[in-house]
Length: 66
Image 1 (tube, rainbow, N blue to C red):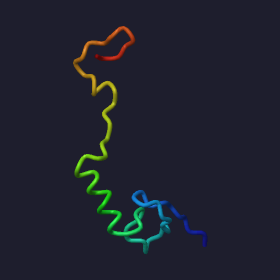
Image 2 (cartoon, rainbow, N blue to C red; image 1 turned 60 degrees about the vertical axis):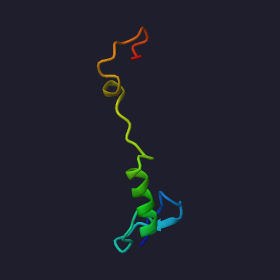
Image 3 (cartoon, rainbow, N blue to C red; image 1 turned 135 degrees about the vertical axis):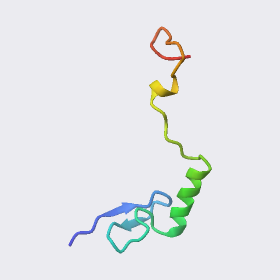
Image 4 (cartoon, rainbow, N blue to C red; image 1 turned 90 degrees about the horizontal axis):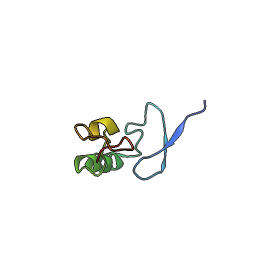
């Protein structure tokens, strides 16, 4: 049976993607918590679509807000 391997998003080590890998896609609880901490401190952010980010701003000549 061929098992898929992915890179841990925190440290890039290879992780086997299977049911007995409790922290997947992370390699360990530590890497999972490091990633959670980055979200909690807003190091990572989900960008707003351009229309929402510029809502209410008048369009400029090229169609973008100020």
